[in-house]
Length: 339
View 1: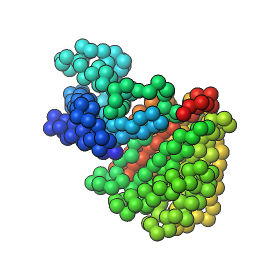
View 2: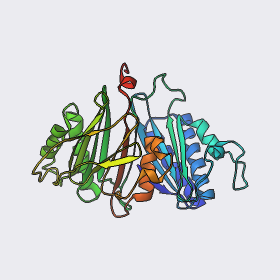
View 3: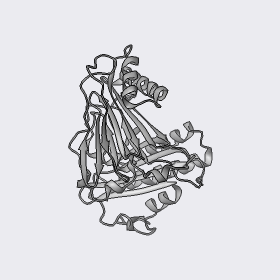
View 4: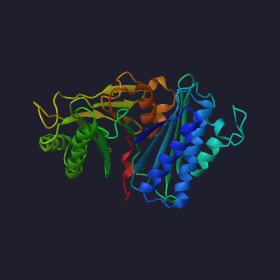
């Protein structure tokens, strides 16, 4: 994921260029790429006009029905008391035609806004190559923000989310240090995860620990949600922290000391209850631990990508790669019979 600061007009073009490049890498045709560029331009222009500390995150998303470009516009401004009203064509607080967010919503497959007075606003736009979507929804909701340390091209963090018939499995790896070698270690961890994703979280972490010996190693955590049991099985080694959030209450998970690939005195999984609608948040240590969704009215019910974006915006540490992943628990009945 690429972070583009957008605090002045000259940076709008860079935001548009990065978004169009992401679309082309996914094989979007000229028309679809133009749609992505238009949305990026509208979001970036909105940040310049109205925001404080504007930032556009450009990445991709993938679930069981489509792959596309994901844009997240973040700011630290005053926020809006009526975010929904701001989407209406003609609404403007800056003397313009007020077409920006309304146009973005019409062009997007997924679109959502979350705003907190005094904390700023976050806007999510997801765009696939095709304007239409298959008739069944994604099997599970997931969102992530993963940004390298400023000045680094390679991201030392990596993650992977895999839907299962009875839920999902998620891994976050944080290679030691920063840059290319850290990225190699975390990418290797994700590759091993994919090879062993049918095994238990404890077995997956054990396989990753054994497989990273030729790398500089890192921290790694794996979570498995079972919709039938209503639980998350979690196994962590190092400092990738997990948190369950449900009913306004957050509970941290146990992460054991060690470094995957180098030292692990004990590898053990723990089970945590997670009811339908609850969230599981998994962060690398590039994210501070002081966040609470209770401080953001309505955020826990928002799209997981927006939850991840707000946590990143307000709690990312400037001295490290930063990753936030958020997965929502779904009822078993929602998952039954899905392709």
